[in-house]
Length: 497
Image (cartoon, rainbow, N blue to C red; front, side, top):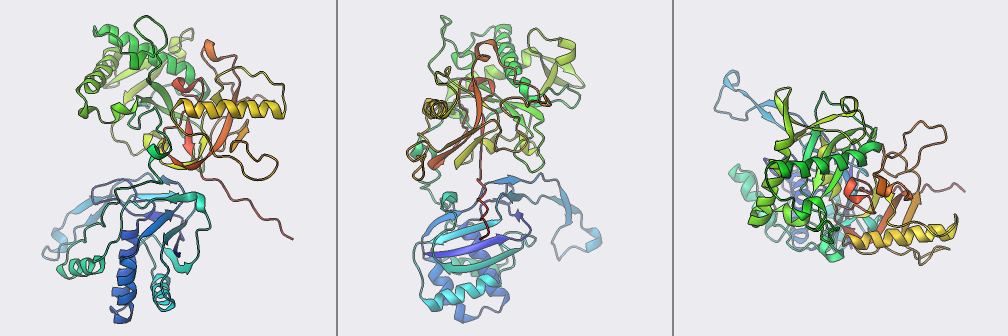
C-alpha cells in the first residue's frame, strides 16, 4: 500500500469544512491533500515530469484516513480587508472572518491508498510531498512524505468522506486559470468503518437540547449532577402539567400506569469542562438527549409536536431574570436559595464544552467522563473474580443501548476477556474519580436514593470497529452517569535496553 504521512508541526490544523462552516475539517480529506500537492506543483512551475504522478494518484482508491480524535479550538471573528483589486485600500471595509482550527490528540495523519505505484512515480510524489509546507490554511505548517507500507496506528482508521477522483487535476487547473475557488471532491456515500449501524446503533440521539448555566448562577460540583438531573426531569414533568399536556412516555420514562417504560427515553447529561489539556471538570450546562427519532424532528410530525411540547414545558417553568428567561433548578431537600442554579437555552455557541458533537464522533475507544453506576449489585468478593463480574456487567450495558460487545483481548493472561480497563480514575482529563480520595479533597458522588447502594467505576472500552455515540452506560445513564467521550490511547513508552 501507499502511505502519505502528514505531520502538523504546530499541533494545529486550520481548515474549514466549507466557506460558511465554523467546524474544522478534521481529519484532512484526500481531496484537500491532493489540492495541496497540486498547489506545490503549480508554485514550482508546473513541471510536466510530475503530471503523470498526479494523474496516477487521482485515479487511486483511498483505503482509509488514519487520524486521532481532536478538540476544536474556540474561535472568534478576525477582521481582514476584502480582496478586491478594484476598490481603493482606504475605501475597503474590514470583513469578519473565522479560522476554524482542530487541535488533534496526535499531530500525525496517514492517508493510505490500496495500490502501490512504480518507483519512479513514488519518487515524484515524495518530492512534491516534501515540498508541501502546509495542508489547509497556510498557517497549518506540515511535514509530508510518501512511503510504502501500512499504518503505524491501525486502530485510528476512518473512512474518507471526500475523494479525489479521475479528472481532479484538470478541474483544479481550470478553476485556477478562471480565478475561482475549486469545488470540493465528491462525497463518499459509503462509510462502513465510521457508520455506527455497522456495529450497532446507540439508543440516544445526537442532537441534544442544550441549556447553559447563566453567568450569575451558582455552579454546583459535577458530583451533584445526578440530583440536579432528577430536578430537571421533575421540572419538565411539572411544566407539562402547567401547559395542560399529558407527560410523554419518552420524557417521563414511565408508562401511563406508572410502570417503567421499556422504550428509549430522555437522558439528562452534564456538559462540563472535560477532555481538554487543562480541564478542571467544571459543570457548564445540561444536555437533554432524546431518542434518535428526534435528531430530525421535521421528518416526523409527532416528534416535532412533542419537541415543541418540551420547549413549552421548559418555558412554562422559566422566570424573567437578568433580562432573559431562566430555568431555576434545585434538588429536593436542599436549601433552595443556596443551591439553586439558573439555566438558559443555549443557541449556537463557540464554547466547545457545550457541543454535543464531542460525544458522538466515531471511535474504537471510549472512556467514561462520569463513572458507570453498575446495573446490579456485585456478588463476588474483591479480586479477579469481581473484576470479571464488573466486566460482564459493562458488556451487558453496551448491549442495553444497542452497541456491540467490546473487543476481546487476544494475548497474555487476560486473553478472551473483554477489552475493558477498569479503575477508580478516568482516562479523561478533568474527570472526577469514582470514589473520593483518603484525604477527602474531592466530594463524593451524590446519587438518587435508588442508585446509592450501587458500585461505581471508571472504564476505558475498546471495540473491534468504530462506533458512534452517544455512549452512556449503566444504571445511572438517565441521570448523567456513565457518559463517555471518544478516547485516544497513548502509546506505551519503550524501555531503554
